[in-house]
Length: 438
Image (cartoon, rainbow, N blue to C red; front, side, top):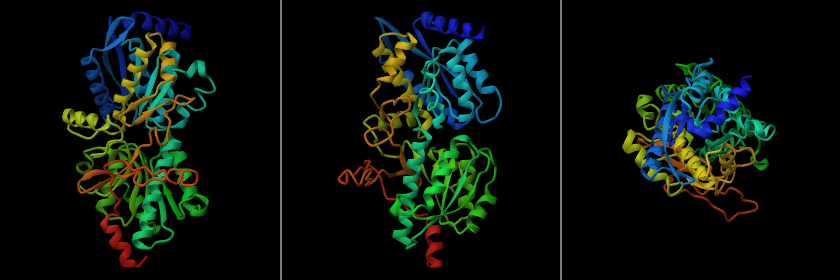
């Protein structure tokens, strides 16, 4: 009975546009009391305002404007809130599409609800491969409604973070003469982080000649994503003799780490994934102690990944007073959706899905092309993310800079994003290891 009701509601939504007239209603899903959800909403707001100001979306001679519906998923906390919020958005608020989402554990359930109601969900915040791989390819008719715009999937995130860790390890070799840098890992307890941790643990110990990092993994610690202190973990990292700590954080523990790391002057360089360190408020949030933290990022001062990057960053800053983090990729998600609707010439769900599958769109984060499981394509010429370090009070990009993605088959291919700067070992870390002579 429920499946029949879901199908009827989905059909009514397409035919009647959710009783909203010439309006396309898009539910923006995220943990709205946290920066991750706030930027979901703000990125979507800019996109909707720009599209509406430019004349809206034309379908079959009829012009539609975008109306956003705020959907607070409360994803940082375990429980049924996320699914209930999405179901209310579909059944009560009559949204036609969904964008956003953040925490993998919640997204697995929320996307099941979207599939139940046959509502297209443009993921813009959750990275776990399993949200799409093993679903879209194995049961296409059920999961064809799911697409990911940002971030790149976990395996690709691991690849980028691996490259950044390699850059930092090479700096330790070059500047400090440390041939086999020791690497500790501090990662939040979350499903999306598991495969990344496993990959880095393996590759840290793999020799350079075999494609690894040529270092030594000395320990892994997994605090809660909502931990209020990581001093104990950092003390253990220092005792391990690590030169570098690889971080994997998407939640507020990222700020806690930055504060404790700098406050305690732990003599390790911090690099990896720290979503909170993407935010303009990072230094203030860490009490000034987060300087020199490095993370996979999307946006940085003065770095134009495409011709659309800086206009978006400037508009976001002018409107909201800060640099967007990656969940503001709802901006690109809505533009990609609008583009697909116009190319489809229809609001019928299957027609929009077919148009999305043929997407080739230059966005603020790179060129977006969906693969066979509706995931964003990673690599040179598509989207790769960037490496960001806090230097001189600002987030500066240090990668891609003189990046050779395929030195064997394409040795002349060197990629450098305009505006990148060299990575810098934190001064107290450099001083500590120079004093020790290793």
